[in-house]
Image 1 (cartoon, rainbow, N blue to C red):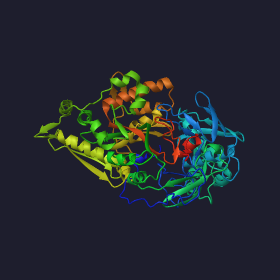
Image 2: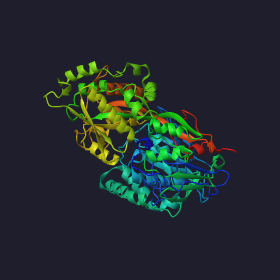
Image 3: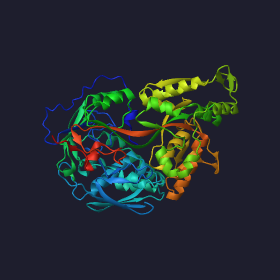
Image 4: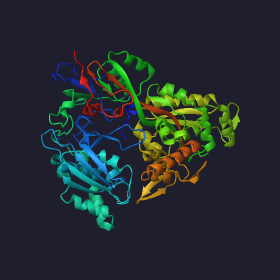
Length: 601
């Protein structure tokens, strides 16, 4: 998933010192378009390599994929063309044929060919995962890659089908074979076939050799940028990356700016400073408090664009720890939290209060569930119901405080990373609300997000914040609740449930639960089935899992994100409108789609 700027690390920062465009550089009539990359910060020493996590390659600008995902709320297979002009897929996605842009070229003038795609896929295998898993039993893994002709390539799926195969395939990063091809040994494809056979020690050795290439691929540093995108890197320093137009881009006529400058940032506050200073033509989704938003809106040309974002924030429980193993306690907390108040404080522009806990962003849930969505318990603020639930859990009232069944004080610690301003505000609001209703609650912060995730996975927290609903694939959505974090993992192509506190199982939920109207179900098994189920069966499974989430409350869904984008029309026009499918993509992709034009004097 792409990292949202809303949850980017928020540190104590000074006013921007980036080498922003000052008008002193002549960029031609198209001018210099200035923005940031919402997925990563600038690292001037990073190689120009898309396989490197901090590499100086930026999606939609000098970085290209086969295709760009649309923002469809329920269909992950909707894409815009990119290097792939078109594609066809068999009904079960067992075979995908991709047709490349016929006039696509690299920035050194060489044509983009099927061999480039083949090499890119080979490199993807060294990194593993999704369509390029080496385990022959893995669902949705590519089996064969066949170059049909210079602009056509055929990819088949392995025996264990996945309905996310096409979307994973189209997301493949494309690099030039004449630059990266030497990273693959001459016998790579023979080794790949041997690894995919999965039989005996030779297969294991082949797998080890292929995955052993990962560090070499990640560390590779080309001498210059060779891009198939609309731009190519001109220079980079700690403050900014400057890219110039690629004259060989296949749709060069659509690209308005002559250059793009990506300013560095170290947190949301620096993005706010850029916007208030009028430096940015666009800033992707950024968490902004109301007072700051008013200052940004006051800037000449400043506008806000809003659209769907398939992500929600939740309060999650470690059910291996008492009293959170008791569903009545979790329900009581849901009845004590005013989600509208939390959202107003934490995400006034970037979120809407969750209507209920379903595991899915409300906009997608309404499509998946239809009329059944209104049948879910909304858990509206109701202290009387909360008290009844706590009594059902054996909790007792001692004076003005609730105590555990054994009479000991009940202290709720809500854990959040110190770098997430919206989560901290939300946690403080929740702790205040709970304290008002007799629940002794405090907020505990982790130094940074990396530490937070490691301690969360180690089961050190009773209660913490958790991103969920990561659509549009229903499999990805429910993996957040009924996947590795809750004990379900694939081992050798078989789904297993591991004990709480092991293998990253920090949620600690039961393997099976009783669900109204469905009886005893295994949520992890149902989630796993979503990866290959038919459309009709997917809808049934989503309905059941929504009920599981609503009745069992492994999390309390707090707010559903709104993709709030900031643009400034002083220098450029033609930005996507509200609710555009393109809003979750970079400005570079917007340009490829024919948007963004220099404002005429």
